[in-house]
Amino acid sequence: MLAGFSESLFDSPATAPDADPEIAPLTSGMQRRELAHGAWVDLRPGWLTGATPLFERLAAGVPWRAERVRMYESTLAVPRLTAAYPADARLPDPVLDRLREKLNAHYGPGHGEGFVSAGLCLYRDGRDSVAWHGDRIGRGAYRDTLVAIVSLGAPRVLALRPRGGGTALRFTLGSGDLLVMGGSCQRTWDHAVPKARGAGPRMSIQFRPPGVL
Image (tube, rainbow, N blue to C red; front, side, top):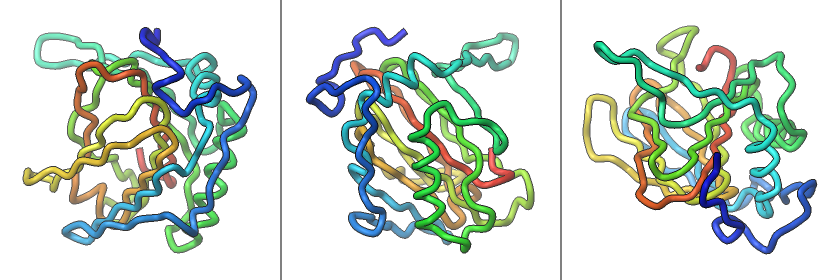
């Protein structure tokens, strides 16, 4: 499933399969970028270090799902694997519980009911991607919300552009990097992970508040 996996792609040296990554404080190293229309992104490079064992555990243990979508007269495979964990589901690794707790403690009660659900995406190589989209806000289309993304594995670009078109911003996320989209970002901006020739396997872990899909 993960042809081309190499320890050198991630954070070496190799560690024990059951080792947990080190989680840095969110009170330092966070970089905020204000965007148009009331949107913003927070970037915390290197939030996790030593994340290769976590990547390997999730890659091997998560019940990955290959989705298919209807396009005109054809049914096409979505070029990535996914897994979803709603608010009442047990997360697939205790480290994910710790990450969610730290995000909720940092962002506090000001973002509503907090991060509750988690979604995982596995990009097996550079041919896997996701097209421009905004996460759907199921309850109240005009409210602001947060979506936090933790990247594991090979570096990949996460691009953002204003909804309706415009100049795209490109954030290259490495293993252990955190990016949080906030304010009106899900309503007024779209994001994508473009194809990347020769890229190795990469995983994203998304934490979302209630009602955001």
